[in-house]
Length: 170
Image (cartoon, rainbow, N blue to C red; front, side, top):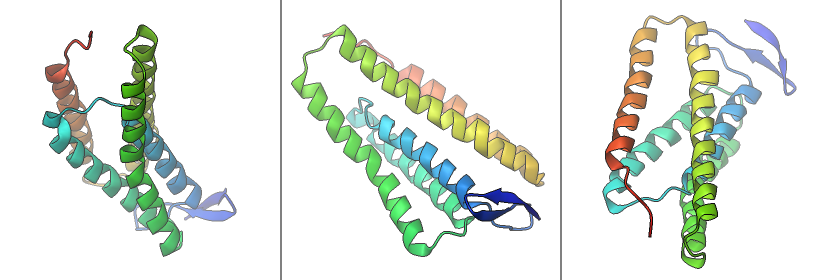
């Protein structure tokens, strides 16, 4: 069903395997890429590396499947996935450079807390503003299963965050 024009392309939606607009796909990629870039400003200990790797694999899988539903050319698709995959390591290198060059201060901590809050906001927007409404709109039989996985992911992440929290005063 053609529902309108977005970004010069006709947007097709529906549960019958229709393509979504390039705008919608690119918006999702932009939001997850922002999340990935800001996520690099997180302090990652050795015990968190496996969890971060799993998180990045799932994140890039979500970006890839979102882009597969658009009408973008293959080269654009690959470039966007590669760009998004590189954002967290690049921003983490920037984090390490800032972390090592500036002494610990209240304002430095506020900066990193703010960046992590923006990262969380971006992923919440992607989930609650893009994914869930789209899934409800599709009205698929696996809706409850998918929503259960989203809920499980947020609960598990919350518990892991609580278990890992510790004081950073130096």
